[in-house]
Length: 229
Image (cartoon, rainbow, N blue to C red; front, top):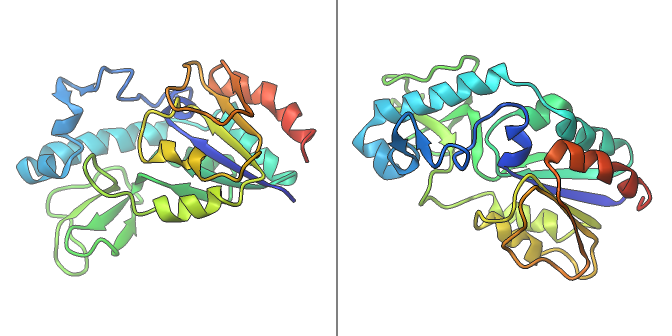
């Protein structure tokens, strides 16, 4: 089977009803994103940050995977599909994708503020002040905040380097370092980008741009991909 590597962004989740920062002008209930999604914000007001992610977690659990998620899962019948996502939701997994790497963490997990390697699955949507890890420190959302390193970039690069076909779905490649993944794919690898916005990142010469939202674009792209098996 050929390796089909897919980089997904906020656009694919938006069609399931998950709000994006871009759609809201970078604001959440009047708060700038830098007030709720940075290490500085956490040190300044833990309760506000926890509430921000509690509401996002609650919303995520009310949403369902859409056709774009489902098509990517169905493609596992024909390809070895690796999804690298910038999204913190679980919609890819819930649609049936079996190999998903989250660049920016997972909203349904919490991590220790003392030992980042201590990560816990959340079976509820609310994380509170006073919820602690086994070492006694406060739990925080298991997400990569603005200004933090992206630990999963190294495994993501290794996956991209083995791509036979590379897809970009629901992102116009404005978020770094994720946008740099296209620089690591093998030369002459077919690249397809599905997004309603023109990419600002320079794409390989053999890239095909499908100017559609994720669900419509993946319907168009599915048959073309099957011809590349």
